[in-house]
Image 1 (tube, rainbow, N blue to C red):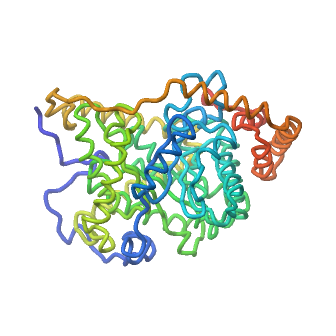
Image 2 (image 1 turned 135 degrees about the vertical axis):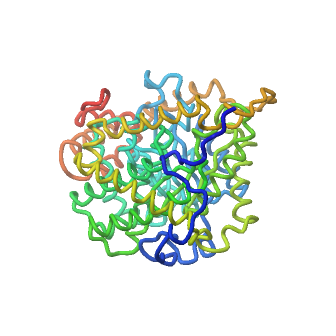
Image 3 (image 1 turned 90 degrees about the vertical axis):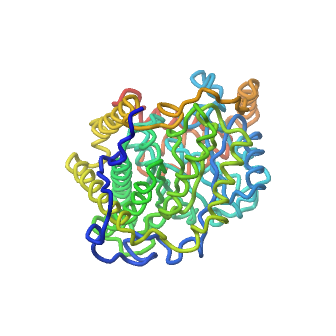
Length: 524
């Protein structure tokens, strides 16, 4: 077996055998001070522990609700909702295009009835909720608000995050519905709606996670994510919103991979870069709008089907890098995710991994414990410089939207993914249990199995919702959504009325698509 070359990170940064004070000259600011290299709070986890937020969602709303309740009983601190592919694409479960995908990769939510079941018995004034949803993000947030209203919880008491980052869908995931520009309008309409009605909600989680999962390097993840963030800020400013205000509600979502020190440095560089971007490009002076807050998730693409228990070690290393890098919330993947949706046992181990870090490791005792390390400081500066160079290149192309429409960002990621795969195949990169140390003796793993009748039951429930609602009220509400889509006013208020009238996610998205078009082939 050829030895892995440990002298280069996946971003091509050469790692020297020894670092000295000459590699990290100059003082850095204390934690809690701009540009927040060392963390956004003065005492970090001593005063504010990171939120343990395990991602969950499968099959029906009832089954996912049971998993949520189980995780909360086991010590989880916040909800994180995974939606199935049809929901992410704005399709109802009984749409012919949804056949075979209902409840597979997350929970199916077609209507207010589903959201009520999903959140049954969960006190929304005491739980922070993250929802991984993008193209129809506004619809799912409005459903959440409507359920809270029925619980007697005011909108101002709601806390959480909706991903709402559609730009990375064109780059890395493909779960888009409308062309980029009306999608940007929908995202910024959500910004404005929350500023007025749900002020404690994080209106976007600008995601590098999926960019990294698609095969980017750490530098590309950093640069492309922040470039998308710039595009959202520019769109918000064009819509008349104030950066010092909406900047407080922006959040980010990064990946944590196996290159331990590179990941820590990436998170530190992200904060420093973003604070400077907000100050220099948008004139932000509010420290809370300068501070980059981020959720981290361990790397799904690093998990192996071979020797799956080894993934427990990978996840622990990745989670530790996120904590040492100063994340505000964290999801740890389950060791069986390369094989199936997480089993309850695997999800519990993933949760316990975070709890061991929080309560036994001592890493939460002091802010930025690796701050001042010659190696970490030099690597932080190098990652920042290389990411800045890529952002400048995107600026030259006209910005993130133009670079995406031209296919440039996608091509850069594809080239990096090809290089990584080649390195693994040629054994220039070692993957334990895959191209090295393979023993072929894995025992059986008990996997989570979906109920084969679940899709049928979900389709029947959606049909009942349509049959039992006030048909005239639903028709009028959908017409109002169409009229708003053709105009320039915020589209969320009429969408809220339609969802309250038991119009489905698919019906609302269909009406929007009639006026905005779709983005099926790379062209509107």
